[in-house]
Image (cartoon, rainbow, N blue to C red; front, top):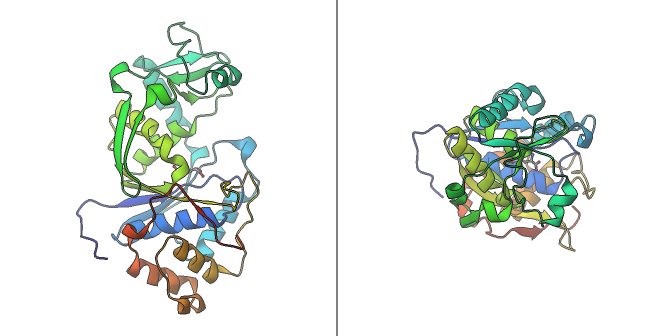
Length: 301
Ligand code: GLU
């Protein structure tokens, strides 16, 4: 497939959370986002989303980076660690509060769960302070309808008011939310293309909403299926999906290319990871990506 040359600098990223080693699904995502920018001579960045210390597994960041390199997925520039970016997130929260776009909230998770996860904005006008309280974004009435054209899944529409309501940007334990940090960092790193797993499709409207609050440029989005087990569960670090077998990089890559429906020839598996990546970059065809939210992982993963 021919990709037209564009003059905008293309920047993509892979943003793993260090809660365990890469599994098949995360390798497939990393590979897809790498190829998506490399066919357009873009830059591929890696950002370590190490914002949640209790969920972090010691040594996982380095392990993930080693796995990426072993699979020939070399990133451009330095790895950005979200744990080094707390000042930027704090400044963003202050900006929102100063502009009356955020407020403190004392509701606990149980209460919000009883509301089926859609917050009723109860604390919005209580004028609570920050002591032991979370911070929520105050969604503006007229702006909650978000739509965008996903490059794989097609047109997506979500009313953020009806789906989540005012959402958390900083937790009561002071940890910044994924939605806030990812928005700030995609802008900070000048990311123009986000290709990631479909489990984040639902989060994208919140991120677009936040981009609008800060006046940021909106990257283009492409969500690829997530790999699931035979009983339909997402392969994830939480359900202890097997880490990728070391020493099997070529075969892991071929399985991932096959799973991404790129039709790798059988002979490819005898090549090195670097050679496979070179083949894949030349032959990448985004239009072959299935527009499904999930797809079963191949046997053995
Ligand atoms: N850190 C997130 C995860 O591992 C991905 C974030 C993103 O790609 O936006 O699920």
